[in-house]
Image 1 (cartoon, rainbow, N blue to C red):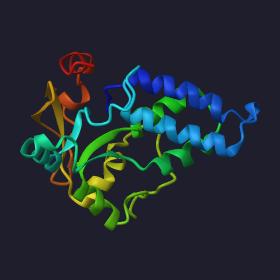
Image 2 (image 1 turned 60 degrees about the vertical axis):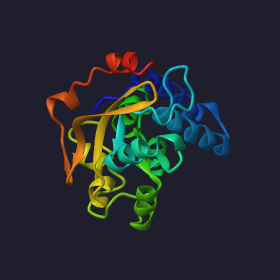
Image 3 (image 1 turned 180 degrees about the horizontal axis):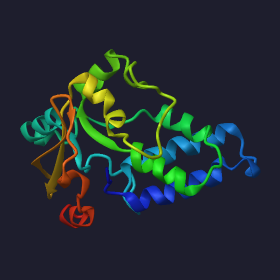
Length: 207
């Protein structure tokens, strides 16, 4: 899966490699603070634009409907949600062998994505015990850097029955497409999703 902010993820990987390098002797509390901020940046920032957390290409169907029906409420009732729990990415980062920028970038490229969901969906994920966890049939310690990973990435939403769609924007108006990331419990990885031209997406959405 690709992302609208691949270059930003590469820059975040460079920062994380330096922070995690044991030769730099960075105190653990500072190290963890920077890691958490960088993982937020990997899902919410675009290049020099900070905290661009709602203009994302991945929205739940319910979030799209809510936004369209209650446009005057702004982003009230919506959440920027990390598709894959940050704590599991942090665990992978802090236990990586032969730490290098390329492997960190691949990890971010695969697992550091944001989605916009409703507050009710966010609460439902929490009630299922999936705020900082993945379903029991997946191993939280295995985040593959090669091979198939999409079912693992979306496993929380599959378990919760939350459909995710690819969207674009016209000004501040959301424009849902007919293309799903997840629909009825299935990860849909068609040629369109695999080959999204985010350069055009960014230009179209005014980033």
